[in-house]
Length: 243
Image (cartoon, rainbow, N blue to C red):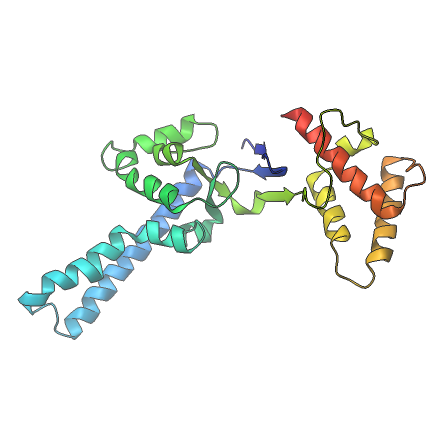
């Protein structure tokens, strides 16, 4: 499975793996099973209450208790459950924007409206599009600028530009070895620098020592905090070079 890697203008680097067509089909199957159970349960309860036998309100009940919730299920779940229906939660997948951020209401609405084109109206054209696109996007995703990703492979590492200097055009990295750092290692450095622990200074010292040994670098007399901050800025520099 291809991995989508993005570095945004806010220096947010995102690694995300698109959910496969099979995972998406399983997720929607789970959703349909849930909706079927909801339909049967609602009819059973309404029948017990003798509400379905009242012709004057049966149409209203059918519309607002049965039809509309089922029709709007995926939209409401994704909007209020951060991009996940029950099926997506079970399969560990989620709807996000291409840059890894949370979709807007209009994005959710657009992909929901185009579901009718992806599946029932075209007989499953959306599945073909998923198989042919790099990020496994259906037509609704392409129009809304969204994709469905595997949660367990989603990593988002943000480097705060308020805390660290902006990289200027003539910036020259101090440690070329920073290019060899992984996102997980950068995340550890950031968490250590931002640690509220009373042992923060000790943790920074221990981490700095370990990184110096790992990368075999001479920090030119820098203190431990400055050394780690410089590594992050150098990492930004090399990350931007890739784009």
